[in-house]
Every structure is written in structure tokens, then in C-alpha cells.
Image (cartoon, rainbow, N blue to C red; front, side):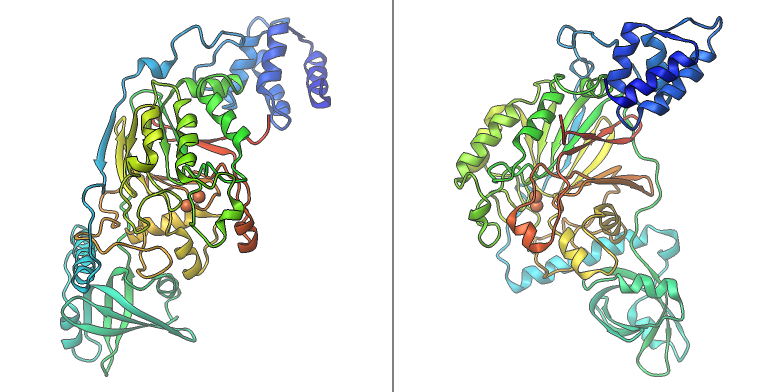
Length: 504
Ligand SMILES: [Fe+2]
Ligand SMILES: [Fe+2]
């Protein structure tokens, strides 16, 4: 018996209660090192409020206390119940999965000059449309109108940033609206405006309010990002969960096989405390956000980090893991930059030639990157996150250890890769599919190997983390991953929990 458990029992006995053996078992199951004392305090409160005052602490009382502290699920299960004997909640729940958007089959560009012109035009049109739907930016003119105004005359227009330069505290933006080009000055006399401008990148589309100088320069007075509106997200009518899995990196020397196997065991109802098993019973969807395998030749000298140097063998092994996901769950798979598919965004679904063993292993909904799905009425935007490091390296104030802030930036810019021409290749397609046209209820990514979650204007943001330890490459780059934490989202409440599989 651990010291903290011995102390906890002492506190209960001192308060004048005896403990039933089942209650003791439940305490051991639910109370971890850090949550045991709060659980006991709550338990004494709960027991003290029962009339007549009980002599014995029962397992029910422990569960009630745990529920109040949210240590147990909404429907606490009796400890010791044989989990395999009855049908699990999600087995009875019909799948409600709709594919809303998938780039697969829509892609194909020669990358010729005209394609680029068309691509940026599409971005500009889509963004202009977003601004036209907003009350505060609906009535706008053009850059030409702003330039035609006399000294101190006002202008309001949608524009694309084609260049950005900083000189001391002054930021100069060259902007274009497909009709006219202008130079816009942002100075630090308005700190809020200046901060926004510092984080703006080339190729981003903005709404500007300006004042004309006596020369050709426009001076920015207000800058409006495309933004997402504050909204009420869709919710499931029943308590079902989606598991948000990403960056498994099968084939890597530092793929955390045991940790990942524990997570699969949990999905099957074989691993975890009663509360965690209760969640597993409610899992209907498993979303895999890319980098399922480690791939080959993804970065210089990757071969030294590989345990399996054959891409087909990597997918064969990945197929074996995917086959272990219970049959009643829906699996959705998108590619990442380590998968065997074109690298330019958007990426189509991983082709059969490579991922065949995964698709043969069980039913898999295979989609491109990015994709949109609706699960039990909740709209998901799935994006591997390949562009996250580009944003982190070029926009001030971001850190890969706080990926949620970067994803919030993408939502505010309404674009998944705002700046063209960084490390992440972007295919100049007929349409810019990387514009966030539909406001998602849940926005998920991976890629940075550090999990996190947050909420921005009604959209739940989750980064899924990873199942790979630190590679030599990451060591050289100074990147410290945080693998082994699995985010799960309750589709009825949109609450996100991280299930820790890092230790037994
Ligand atoms: Fe990854
Ligand atoms: Fe990645």
C-alpha cells in the first residue's frame, strides 16, 4: 500500500467511518497519487451529507464523490464488472459520419504560371466573399477609391498582402486587390493595430481602413482579419466520443510501440481505470491525422532514424495495428508529410499501392489533407498540420510547444497555410482548398508532436500529439516531442480529455 493511500485510509477512519472492501478497491482504482486526497475530502463531504449517517463507506459513495470531482464518467460503472460480457455503448450507437469535403480526385496542376495566377485569384475571391458576409466589412470600396481620395481621405478595401517590410517600428505593406497596388504604412501609434500587422504574412487577405497621406502612401487606421465568427457548435445528442490520433510513425526506431499498444488495448476495453474504460465504451470514431508511418526520405539522413526502411513493410505493420481497432468504431485516415503521397497541399488520400494493407485491415474512411467530416452533427476540420512549423518560424510570438495558438491564428486568417513559398509545398490548384470556408466546430491537427487543446470562438482546437519518441533529427533541431497522450473529445459536450498512456 502506498503512503498516500495509507494516509487516505487513516483520514477516513479518523472521521469515524469503516470502509467496505469494494469501496477500498474503487478508491485504489480511481485515486491517483495527486487526486487521492481531494477524492477523500469529497468522499467525507458526501458521506457526511447522507441521512442517517452511514457506518460504512460503500463503493457507491466513492463513485459519487469521484463523479463530483469529475474523476469518474457520467455513468459510473461498477468496479469488477466484466467488460467483455455486455455490449459496449458505442456498439449500439449507429455511426453518423458524413464526409463534407475531401480534396482527393479534385487535384491536378501542372504548376505553370497561369495556375499560380488562378490559385491566388481563387484565394482572393473566397476571402473577399467572407468579408462581404460580415456586417462591419460589407460595404467596401477598392484600393483605387482609397488612392483617389484627397489628403486625409478615407479608404475601405479588401486586399492581399504582396510584400511586407519592417523598418524600426514602422511596417510597410504592399497590397493589391487585382486592380490596383498600394503601399500601406502601419505605425506603432496604435499598438493593437501594430501588433496585428506584425503577425500578418505575405499572401494573407485583409480588410483595411486607411487614411491617404499627402503623397502616395496610405496610412492604416484599422486592420480586420477574416476571422471566424463566435458561434454555437453542433453537438451530439448522445454521449459518444471521437479519439484523436496522429503521428504514429510506424517504422521509426523510436516509435513507442508499447505505449501505442496500450492505447489500442484501451480502445478494446482492456486497459485503464473504470472512468477511462467507460469513455472507451463510448468511442465511436477514431480519427488518424496523418504520419501513420515514418516514411522514407522525408528529411536528410532519415535512414539512421528508421527501424523499417521499406515503406511497404511500414504500411503492412501499420495495417496490423489498425486491424486491432474494434470493428464497431469508424476509422478516418488522412495523410501527413511522412506518408507515401504527394507532398504538396492539399494531399489526396494515401493511395492503395502503399496503404493497401491498412485499407484491407478493416473499414477505413480514407480522405485527403485537409478534409472535413461531420460526426454526429459536429463539424470537424482535419488537417495534418504540415504548415504549422512555417507559421511558427515566420510569425513572432509562436512556439511549437503551444500549437493551439498557431491553430487559432490559422482560424483567424481563415487559411491553413497563409504564406506561399515556405517549406510546405502548396499545389496551385483551380481553387484554394486551404481557405477555411466553413467554420469548424472542431479543428484538429498533429505534426508538431506536442498535444494541446483549447477553444476559440466556439471552435474546439486540438493538437493530437504523437506516438514517437525524440528522433536524432529532432534532437539536432532542438525539438522535444511529448508523445503518449491521447486526446479524446466528448461529442455531446465537446469537452476534451487527454488520456495518459505514458506509463503502466
Ligand atoms: Fe509527425
Ligand atoms: Fe508531420
